[in-house]
Length: 244
Image (tube, rainbow, N blue to C red; front, side):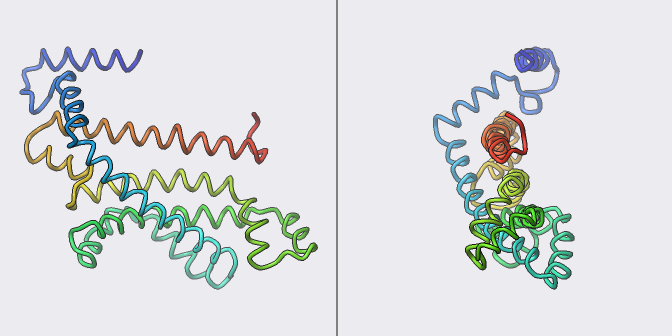
């Protein structure tokens, strides 16, 4: 109901406003542009380009984050050196890395993938480190008493007991990587939703800009509130962290 009220206010205000359509488009105009973009492929292609980049960069970030988190948890020297560095790097916005990415890789897909990976790696590292450190000592002592050690110990004790924290880390890392992707595509090249935003701006097509913003918001909401949040609650309920 709230969305309907906002939509009505938007449509009425835009029709009564003295601003031209390219500055304040009507909702019906935006929806028409959105529909045409989905049907004729302009927005659909951009969605697939962005999602594919996000999947690759996010996967790399998860792998690196878990490995770095394990090393920081396992070795005191690495915690005192790399652990401090990771905390410092996590505070740097992803878009700040873009000039370096352009110098290293050029204005292409690799630069955008670098930004996406950087955007999620440090957050995932911190979450993984916290998860590993919070594994109850009782679990570890019992496992070692029964002879569990090395890779078997990590696979059967540390990782399973860290799952709730890792899932929470995935959710936060996803949000960072999604924002980093949009920023990278907005400044970069090679298509995608961010690049489509820049195209709409340069052509003065505010209806296209708002259409892409709606798509970005919908995808972000679906991933965060439907997939990651639901997964996080299910894991917490299974591990007894949250009541059913």
